[in-house]
Image 1 (cartoon, rainbow, N blue to C red):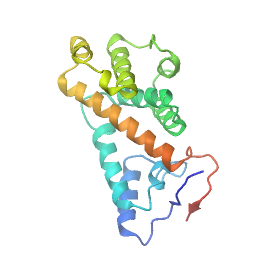
Image 2: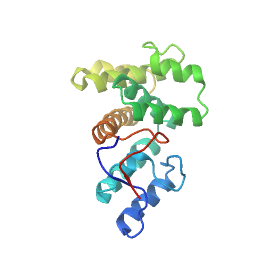
Image 3: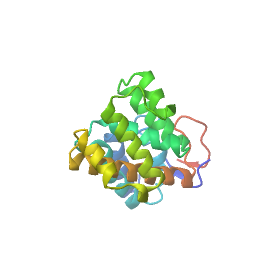
Image 4: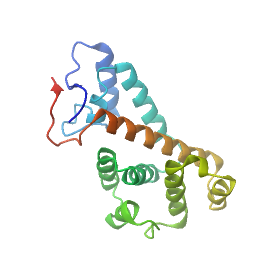
Length: 190
């Protein structure tokens, strides 16, 4: 159960209406495609923070040089490692919607060797998990290994941002007590 009221109807609050429209336009919706997902509504008491979260999501998850599937794989894999149910379900669903084969999704979720992935993706996910687990353990050799696989410095920086974004959204999800979209909801204000 969410620890905060989740405002589903933003009418009468111009700042929240604008943030919700941004979320809907980005496709961050739950069961009702006209209402933002539970992560968004879990911070609805603070439309300014929601707008910041949406801008970060747009810039990190949706924009950039890396393919969206790689970004979702990073997010899902870190969510599985950190046992964030909301993020695990959300990013698994995104990968399925993108047409990623089930064997690849399962490899990302439960195979520590990521055997179903090509070497560059495998290396990216191993790097991301290591960084999420212990960022201070990342050394020059870890960065160079990604360069050796053909990643540009800009792409490597994007991987690093995805790691930070994933950990941030997991903490937000876990601490707010957000529940998976479509599951029984309590403490929801209309």
